[in-house]
Amino acid sequence: MFPTDAAVTVQIAGRHLYLVFDNKLASQIYRRSKVFIFDPFNLMVFATVGGSKEDLKVLEMGAQTVKKNPQIIDDGRRVLYGLHSLLTPHLTGDSLNTLTNLFIQTLCDDIDKKFPPNKDSSYEWQTLNLCDFVKDSWTHASITGLYGSHIYSIWPDVETWLWDFDQHFQKIIAKIPRLMAPKAYALRDKGKAMFVLWEQEALKAEAEGKIVKDADWDPYWGLRFSRVRVKHLTKNDISPGGRAGNGIAFMWGVSSPHGALRQKLLMKSFLTHPQLTANAIPIAMQVMNQAVLNPSLLSDLRAEISKSQTGPTSFDMRKVTNQPKLKSVYLEALRWATASPSPRVVREDCELGEYKLKANSMVIVPSRSLQMDKATWEIPDHPESDPTQFWPERFLDGDEGNEADRLDENAEAEDNYLADTISDHAKTPKKANTEPISGPKSKEIQQRMLALRPFGGGTTLCPGRHFATNEILGGLAALMLRLEVEVIEDELKKNGAPQPNLMKQGGLFPDRPLMVRMRRWR
Image 1 (cartoon, rainbow, N blue to C red):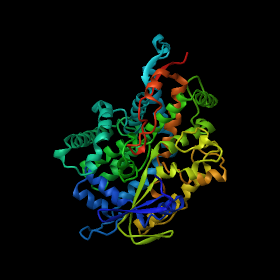
Image 2 (cartoon, helix red, strand yellow; image 1 turned 180 degrees about the horizontal axis):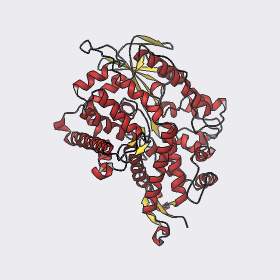
Image 3 (cartoon, helix red, strand yellow; image 1 turned 30 degrees about the horizontal axis):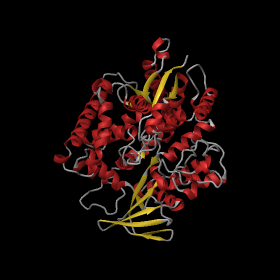
Image 4 (spheres, rainbow, N blue to C red; image 1 turned 180 degrees about the vertical axis):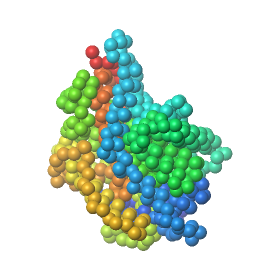
């Protein structure tokens, strides 16, 4: 039930929780990063995944909190800000291109191993669950891109661990005692031990000259951001356990799709920030499911991908992300199958529009409420526009205006955050970045797009959204150029069409399998 009020108040254990359902008020929350702060969640999550008390003292220096801890002597270290500032330069430009190319290449290699070209059995129909196929392939390519290929040498069951941890983490964040949740804590402890080993192996390889200096990617560290992130934490005296917990959260946040706490307390926290693949894996499933469930849509998407081909199984990534139907299906999947409640703590008594908010209260923007609002999304005389339905044509006129609004919102929030975190700083003019996924937009759609919030906003506007786009659309192109896929109608009648699993948060997995036949194109 979506209320008609712009905001409502809920009392939880004597504390106010404000739920904001108005697009413009939500934007003001994201812009006012001095008042609506996220660092309290950063600190809480860091403690949950392995930070020591000494680590937390360092992290709290310069952190945005409601009250300063008088026991902490601020020596000028700004660990949270430092990590925040590292993200965008390492997830755009050449580094983004390297990560995208590596992801696509790994994905293609995996497909070719399962369906080898020029092998007779590859051209015969194989029955499988499409959702599992996408999850397994995308997870391996994501981990390889982010953490290198060597991690599989020391941790061959890393993918099994990842999905097990995904199912149990909420017990840890809820502070359920270890005695009552032994598996959850055992999984966390194993992850910490393996990330300590991963770091040691990478440092050893670096000392032995096995790593090219300043490479965007190498087999031991993976993406350069993984290396600079660890070294930033080490330089600021964060413990090995704290750094390992950081590794857990970064891998989990960018590879798994479950959990409101994962989505907003990890993806938007100091530990991860980028939303590299947290939404990408389940959204890739949703896009693939919708394509094969609708033969005419599948044909349209194949036609657009063919326009981007540079060879029989190769393509131009930029052309793929600029195809109108592909873009529309991608954005519709984000609208239809993400639920990202974006939390903040109110730092001081303030006003938000006509509402008065109390200090130390929480405020949440429940994105799915915005994304499913009939008044916003339903078009008169177009029953297919019902927001509860997946409508592939909903965003055919692109999202350029949306990106401009997000960047303006982000720039104001970043200025406020920088001024509040670093007292002596020189402001530098911000360059306007445009998404590879852009196009013209009507004023009507611009208004609706304010309600599309899969990537958050403000200082927590996901810098990994560029890669998420490339992962989903590039992966889709790679799969469609290699494989023929069709639904098994009897299984579809028995199971029904997959819907978003509303028991979870973040990028929403399909709630049931989709059984298909798959074979290599002849």
